Length: 221
Image 1 (cartoon, one colour):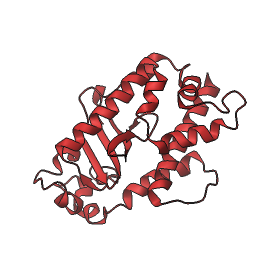
Image 2: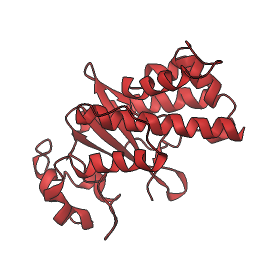
Image 3: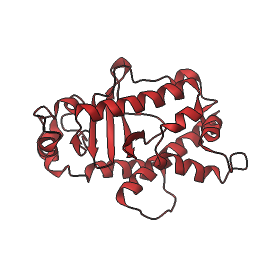
């Protein structure tokens, strides 16, 4: 069980790394450590038009910089403001611009469908909502396993997450996505989960539809 969970973590981090590299337009394909992968994702958020917002919005203010240009809404910072921490790292909270209601609803539908399928162990259905940037690293890493080589996304997820207790896969998206920070085809979905825990999930727009960019949501620190 411990080995499976460790492999699952590596796969999830690799998916996040691929998302970051794809957004940058490429990069070398050398292996990275888990810490390096996490740093890459955070750096992407820092470097995406947030310099202006980092001065005023980064400390939990009403949102300067990027929020002023999002969807023409005067309350653009409202959705993500509750996720900001005074003096903390708000790079994800200030990523890009605040999405409009339609985009938030579309992202919520995709994320909810993915998390529900994942919680039920419906791996083929789960794969339908995963972004290519999240699936490609799984297939690449699986190619080095004699048991998973040549398998598709559903079979890989079944092997990796099928042994994880269902309770650990239960959806934490209980009240929908509260904010969607968008920069082009990339985004972060932010939501309030049970017991006061806040989560974020990278999202990718493919063929006009939002897809999930990671195997599981991440908790805000």
